[in-house]
Length: 342
Image 1: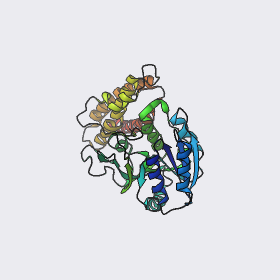
Image 2 (image 1 turned 90 degrees about the horizontal axis):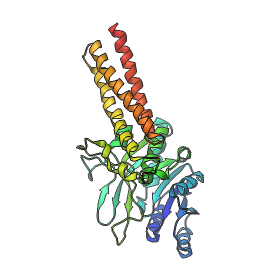
Image 3 (image 1 turned 60 degrees about the vertical axis):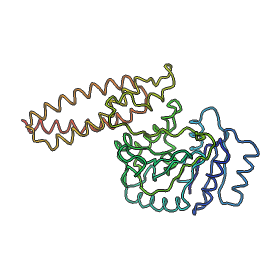
Image 4 (image 1 turned 90 degrees about the vertical axis):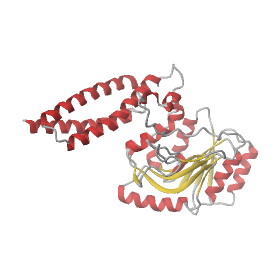
């Protein structure tokens, strides 16, 4: 029913994750371990842990490219659902049973969803945090309401890790992790997933990421999937995760393109959407509204062309697709206003 893809570098953390999977009250699950430095003795311990369970095990030798390893592992999936996690992740014992029941109900209502995301907590021994959060209620409450995630909420206010998501295998076989994007590859992956279909969020707390290490670092860098943008950050071009994600000046994913592109798309998705709502409910005369809209569309068209020239194949082209849909709506309003004006 479920496949867990786990990247392995730390044996105690991996054993904690396997133990959590064994405790799940749904059987016929599979584990794929991406092995990077486990010794034969480590692998023997892992096999022993699973010997009395109904779990099947596949061990894949890791290469120099973690993204390729994950992509290859995903193509091996034979179960309908998949969870990608780092070692050290644990779940409540009824996680799979409850989530599967809810997931099937969601599928009946909305059609097949690409991912089902539950609330989670990270704990590194020296701090913990709620990984569903907003800048307003950080560490306290999940920021997403129960239901289908909106593109603007997902991108600009929230954060979750892949370990919190139950992924639909049919959908994730259609997309790939992009190693060139470094830490933002996870963010890029979730964005691709969202454009394939709906992601459903639940406020039930099921997922716990715990790393009991002597140092202050988890065995893997945390997934910078979706970092909240500070309220007072007027210069969105300087968003930290995008500056950090660019490897070097020789990378085709250049810093200027990334920062400018994301900043512009942020405004396309949010400011333009606000403009649409404003014009729909505005008491302006047709000529006044048309003038406002013409200036707005003209400016944003220049921006979108500029970003396309800079961005090449960056993942935020997906956002441009979303922005184009907003443009379509703007143009429809413009035609309506123009028609009424005549």
